[in-house]
Image (cartoon, rainbow, N blue to C red; front, top):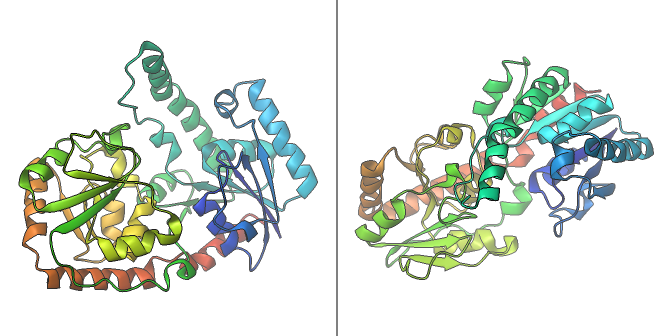
Amino acid sequence: MKILHISHEGLPDPRVERLAMLARGFSKSYFFGSMRRGTPLYEEAFEETYHSKAFRTLNNLGIPPFYQRLKKEAEDVVDKIQPDIVYAHNVISGKIAYDLGIPYVYDDHEYWSRQTMIKRMKAKSLPARMKNSARYFIVPRIYRKWERQILRSAASIVTVSEAIAREHRRHIATCEVIPNFPFKSEVGNLAKPSLHSGPLKSICLARDYEGFLEHRFPGRHREMIEEEGGIIVDWVGRKPPEHWKWIRHRDWIHPSVLMDVLTNEYQFGLIPWTDFWYHRYSFPNKAATYSHAGLIFVLNRDFVSIINFLPKGSCLTYGNEREFLETIRTMKKMSPEEILERRIYLQDWAGQNMLMDNYVGTLREVISRAQ
């Protein structure tokens, strides 16, 4: 069987590549998407890859004649490969698959019609504010319309969290969940956490330190950690201002050493955002990353998809600033022995339950419905 994966984003893309690898036992995968951004995680995932510059804003919004160029390139790839099914990643690719008229699987990575409603908080200039307004008021309307069509016509639906799946099941009876997990081969040889000494160390893997987007806004949590003291915070992402002495900015950590660094150097993994309506749908990659490194989670309790999936004792949650302060103090009161026990249990649990390998049967069933 030939499967054509379509994505508006280029490679590397860990989810797209892992799904192609997972299906290698019963299919051959091909890729059509935006231009490459670096070295793929799995070069062997696809028989052939096709990259296009046509995945641009006007094209991605379905505006003719721009969209027609994108669709024509997709049709040319289909004519060349003759795939049995299309595996469409997110709503833009879902629109293309819908228009191609080929049986397709729709994989909604991040509940796109809702994610596009999240505002950019740093838009200060007039052009930036106008773009933000268009993004907030126009784009979601287009994508919601497409989403309804895509969901009704798809042979199978896949997404990353049960919360998103429940929303999609309003339109289609079956929606499977395949989270963003690594393969066992990626995490199987990790060292066990060890007893720490000295101050507690926590890390936040984030693109932005100051809440560029509404759902990644830390509020006063930065200052509260600084005022309380006793916890070192390393921030991997955009570099914060020099006067933020309590944050130790850390450069991007290469994926080949990331898990070892997290396991050996830290005890807690932060997702330190204030509450926001989108969090209940979110199941970010860092959920698996923190778990396999045995890092105890510190996160807002509205991240229900993460909290409900993880075992008891792996999360410290808060709902407001007062509870966040209590959480900080709870972290400081935990003995090194208790922290180590929780970390080892979480890492062992993740090594059994947070693996992409566990979902090969689900993926096979999803694909079989499109044949």
